[in-house]
Length: 212
Image (tube, rainbow, N blue to C red; front, side, top):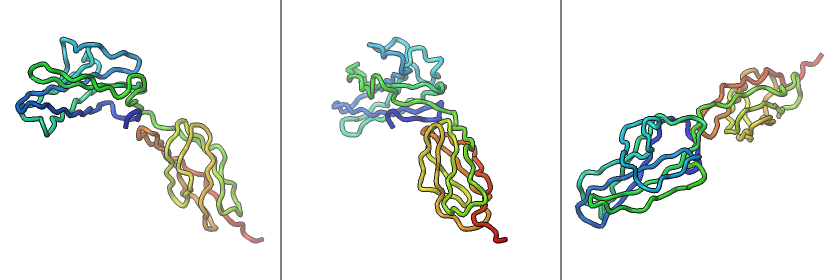
C-alpha cells in the first residue's frame, strides 16, 4: 500500500497504459528515488532495464510492449528494482510513451511522503514484569517491552484481546486461564514490514494455591 512498509530489498512496480491508436508499441518509464531526492524534469538519455538500484545511475527503468492494440485492453508492465537499501523511504512515478514519442504526463503517487519504506529489522522483545506466581488471578497481567510497534501473536495456553504492541512497554491481560501450571505461554510481535520477533517465553506461573 502507499506509505507502507516492506522487508523486501527487491521490489516490483507495475503500471498500465492505453493508447487510442489501434496499433502501437508502448513504453513505460518508472522513476524511483529515495525520498530525500527530487524527481528529474526530463527523461535521461541512459535508461535501465535490469540494473540494480546502485548501478542504475539515473534511477529510471523502462519496459517496452510488443506491437498491439491497446485502445481498450491496456498494456501492463512490471519493472523489477533490485538492490534497494534498508531503512530508506522511496517514492516513484511512471509515464507512458508510444512509438511516435507521444507521452503522457508523469503519474506521481506522492512527491513528499515515501510511497514505501524498507525495514528488515525485527522487533526485539524483553520481559519487564513477570506474571506473579502463585496467583489466584485467572486473568493475570504481563508486561513486556518491544523495540517496534506491531501485531502480537500469542502461543501456548495464553491469549488476549490485546493484539497491537507499541514501541516501549506493553501490558497485556491474558484471557481467563484454568487453575494449574502454565509454562508454555509465548508472545511474538510482527512489525508493519512483516518482520517477526523471536518468540518471547512468558515466565512459568501457577494459578491457584495448594491448601496446607
